[in-house]
Length: 269
Figure 1 (cartoon, rainbow, N blue to C red):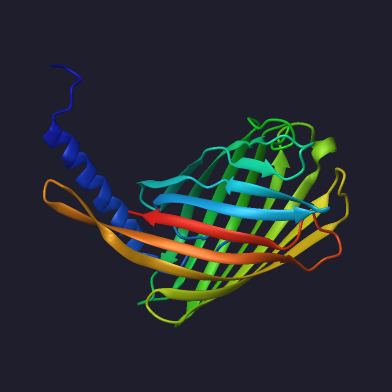
Figure 2: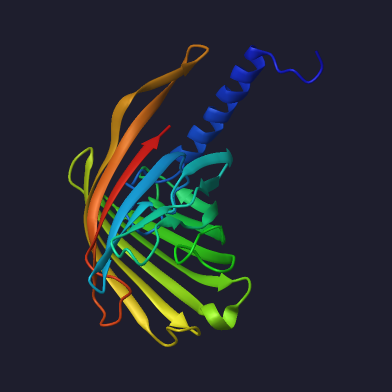
């Protein structure tokens, strides 16, 4: 029948896809993905974060952390589609609800693994669409272009990113901001990484005009725990699990929350 793809053809397509995705990841460092700072590496898998934020005597749990499905459709490119996170508030006056749906596209401009220059440069374009209810989402769509760089020195990995949030509408009300994130990671053994991150946001316009917010986030990541394989037509592909935990601690007098534990789970394929 016309338009029907035979099982063998479907398997062959998946094998080609996995071969291309594997090749894309070989030509870059194998560092662990930081808890907050976006990794310049292109990756594929599923990720979910769980964050507890405290402010003004009340707490909010963020289930999902605006993370989701990551895949590599073309060489050097990653697409991430993130379903809305769910926010649960301890303050009964603030209704629980879902946030905004978002997407992210990465394009690796340069990549070299540990056997060569151990460095990477990536351009990222992230966007969100206002699907959130009540106070759990934005009123408007937001676009965030970002440049990310990383350099490794043996077991030490340094990552830095800088980007700006650009509301599509209501710029006067929301304002703009610049996010500057830095991560220092050290691999203790094959699986265990310790890290420290500094995440700063500078606000321009809107209700937080002229303010700055900086967090320090010490954490630990257990990366690439083998959990099995999945097979297609005799081809075996590894499944690995990554777990991470840390806490965001405000360093500036102005902060929208403080002492926020973060728990992260990722399955890579």
